[in-house]
Image (cartoon, rainbow, N blue to C red; front, side, top):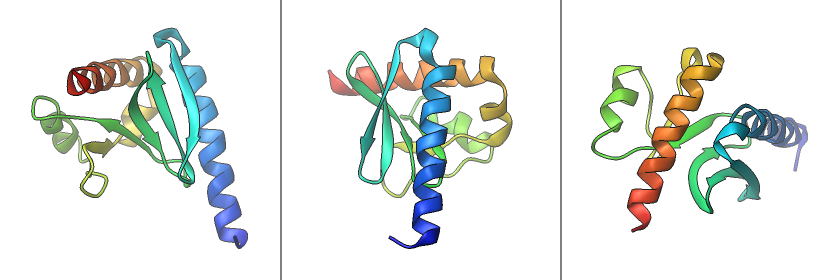
Amino acid sequence: MGTKGARGKAAGIEAAAALAETLSALGVTSKSMFGGHGLFKDGVMFAIVDSEGRLYLRADGSTAMAFESAGSTQHARMPYWEVPEPIREDADQLREWAATAAEVAARGRR
């Protein structure tokens, strides 16, 4: 891994730790996965933090429009959408969006 990859990985690790701390009231845990991190609630992954530190939350047909309206983009073909910076910078809004994403992930698991 080159310098760029090392910086990216460090950014992802730092971002995942900070997000897990911000979302700790929701019972969120973080696990290293595929060069990034998964964020879990009750054992169900509802968010991805990539190696660059970008946060993606799980969405479905009932919540994807909120992401689109906020200018978000979908993570490849996966049902995860990048969290816009204004949401990410507001801890209360971030917790709301994360709680909704955790509910979506839990529904998808049933």
